[in-house]
Image (cartoon, rainbow, N blue to C red):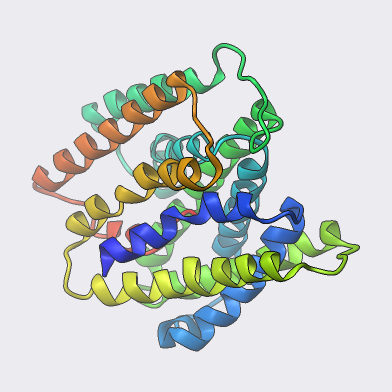
Length: 292
């Protein structure tokens, strides 16, 4: 189930590029459908609501909106890999807002993520049909990673204060509601939506988000957080493959190298975290919320 969720999450980039609607229209309608799907499919999405859900949900909404913008402008590989640098920002945010202490390996992890991220902003990328403005798209993707880091910090904050296991799902639902509201002003006017575009939006909201979260939350009841996090690394690996298969989009060698560094550093840090005698008890909340 966790692998199935990762595969569904990974199709987001290709599906977003598959619709002719604008980024604002795609993001708004997708999140509106996803919010309804989550409320209907997951009882936990209807529980765990408190005032803390809304500020964290706002940053999750910004994560979703900026991710859609990035996918419309740059390659899906750039979008997902740059968003995957969120742990680097989190290591800077944690000590300030959560009073968490950095360890020596955290500095090496951050350095590796920054090195991988730097490869996306060196050289000049040639615009393509599926990536008309890579430079702007890369900035949107980096912003998505930053907002995702604040979301993860917010989930830790929730876990420390409430301990409600349903708070993460409530945050995802609230985030999609807020994302829809943020996108709709920029989505007007909405012309007649073609049947194919409507089918893609339903897939994005109902399947790529709704069904994926159903699989993830069900699977995580029997899978430890570390194993779930490892399995979910399939998402950034498969994301560019789907886009290549459906849209013939080919990321640059620099992007692939940067992505490989980011994923390798993330896996190494997860292995080190597992071996630590004092693992982070709030990590499960972050695993239950995906960045797409």
